[in-house]
Image (cartoon, rainbow, N blue to C red; front, side):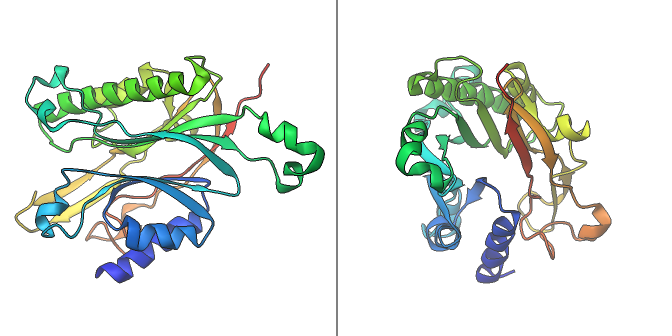
Length: 288
């Protein structure tokens, strides 16, 4: 599918989902497609471009991919953001010693009060509001071998360290109820892998596993016939995690069945990405 049509289908699917926060990975048309299309629909965004994106070589420098977070500006106020930087030379030491958080972008948001409360007597309550949260979008290494498993685990640990440090520096300290955390992304890790366990051990829950008692059967289904990673890959590697002490999950987006996608896998009609869209509806747990 040519990019103009595929880009239109992708942005339309995101807009139709009507999420308050959108986390994207492998975004190589942020400035010319995603940002203008979503901005016109009430979203603002932050973007972290991968300084060593493989797209740079394959497109003669015309494109570079990265990760992005979009948010409804009428509902949310951006309080700050953090871009974990990974120096090129950290690829050399052993995996466990690398300061590598993968492709990671972290942002802190405050809930905006309804418009009628931002005027007159409601202004003080609005400016003193403390209902805020942290969102991270994440894309981890893709190697499907033992070293890749170890690298993803190390990246997940580093990413969570960066997120918790950002939380502490934002004034919330490490208290669970202050600035609770949501992480969404392509971990390139199946549910049994250590990288997934990292988030669970640090107090986050998988929103799908919590709501439907299991991860989706698959979140990507690629059938490649060219020289790059030929073969079929059908697995669950995408997740939405949320801090279980602060959020309830009251709904998730249903995943399509294999027969609804068709024998050629993804992308396909109705699903223009090679990964399926995940969506979780969360609500803050009321303070006791």
